[in-house]
Amino acid sequence: MVKSKKFWNDEYKNPEHLAMSDEPSGDLITFVRWAEKNAEWQPFPKDGFVLDIGCGNGRNIISLAKESGMKGLGFDISTEAIRQAKKMADKLPIEFTVQGAEEKLPVPDESVDVVLDMMATHFLNEAERKELVTEIVRVMKPYGWLFFKTFVLEGDKNAQRLLAESPASEKNSYIHPKIKVMEHVWTEDEIHDTFSPYFKIYKMIKSHKHIKDGQPHKRRTVSVYMEKKRD
Image (cartoon, rainbow, N blue to C red; front, side, top):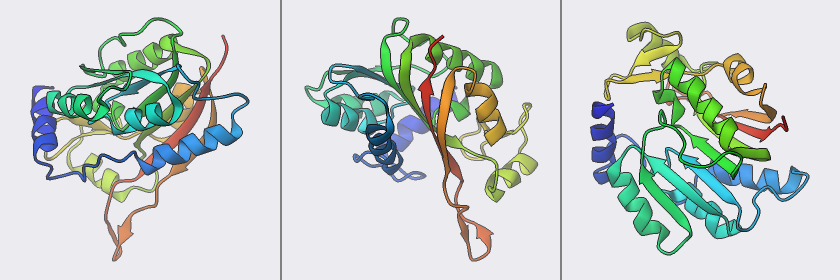
């Protein structure tokens, strides 16, 4: 975890591996537009509450708060990312804190309308992933929305290579060659089995296979739109 914190602090100060942006993710914008069109009632209620797990520089939760009038909380393990998020949020009703995704979510039961979990949980081990899902279910209101984005194994030759060359101790996990920490690659069945007991899964949208000149070019991701079931 210490190595991971240092990597992300350095990355947010001087990006080398990722294209950092202040603009919201295109995948989030697509989800918001879809939910506004298809949800039975307002999915992003004014003065509602949004929780952003692994919020980075806050670009996604800030965009959602600006458009909807929601309040919220974002957290990340990187102190530099949180510093940038606080600066960008200015006077919006959003709190930001330094915290890892493996820790208890610092919000009450059934208090959250929307959860954003975008490219954060693949750094957790199996027990931590299960605990985080339990925590997400605990804090979300019935019929609240979860936008989940992560790496997906199907159709990703890069992931298959990493699993073969640098396997970790858990299934479908490898040791990242640069960060030197474990990363997990979800399968479609694993996503379904993990979330379907608690959520109605509406869409699973996979990115392109990212093949360039016949060779693997980028990692493949999946965006999942989910609505929490009533107990």
